[in-house]
Image 1 (cartoon, rainbow, N blue to C red):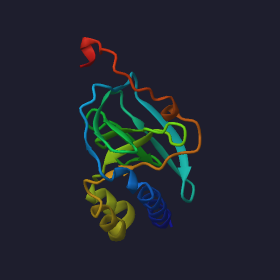
Image 2: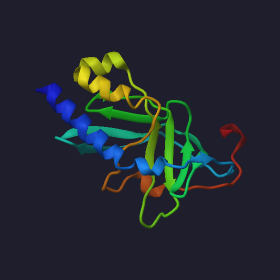
Image 3: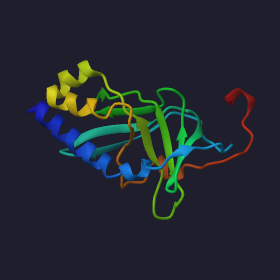
Image 4: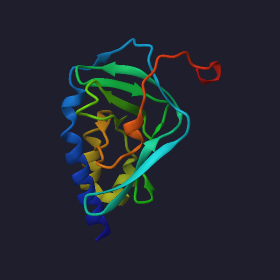
Length: 168
């Protein structure tokens, strides 16, 4: 039964992620000197799918622009900065960062990451079907589905003020 719940949660999660794939089209490198600074680790907790608890967020650090397109800018953080837990099991850490939309009125910032996975953990947790689903997405830019609740993501601020030397 536990495997079925995990499998269904993964299906719902990846279905939600695939609806956002258009945001990764036509991305190009950016040379902006702007950045996002997170002064502490920060997360939120949300229930998705069939009641599975997800804890998601970032490690502290400087998030610098790496890619952009007509929809927004991808601010990449330090290695392994994206935090994600399904129930109490770590799904990461992942490399990635914060996607900031150009239209902040109709869209809000989201967490993105470069998908990778632990094949042994995937096999133990979800079996061969889940493991095969995960393998197909290896290396893709993936968005964590947005949440309706108010989270720290709503307060993300982009700046180009000089950084203190210890943060470079």
